[in-house]
Image: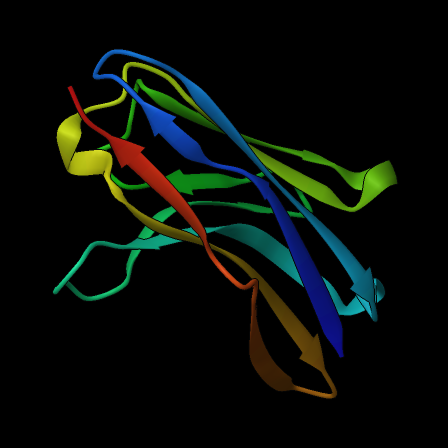
Amino acid sequence: QVQLIEAGGGSVRPGGSLTLSCTASGNIGSIFTMGWYRQASGQQRELVAYITTGGTINSSDSVKGRFTISMDSAKNTVILQMNRLKLEDTAVYYCNAKTVVNADLRDHWGQGTQVTVSS
């Protein structure tokens, strides 16, 4: 099992910045990607960005050029730096880790942290 503890989030005005972090514990050796998803009110959960243990990054077109994801492998932590935030970035952000054990692929989720962008 993998446990994910999120930190960061909060409220900010449009154009502002926030940083989210997520630290994994437990069977961290089985993790091959960590990343962030978000879910706005009344919407489906969507990918924001993820990074593999090999350093490959994938991010949503809606955040490219504004959000940066990075991983501190020594601390088992993934960080999402969010700049130039927009009203439409308002959502609950969930940390995600994907693990594989004996070909069994699983998703693990954090508890979610609220990001509110308002003027």
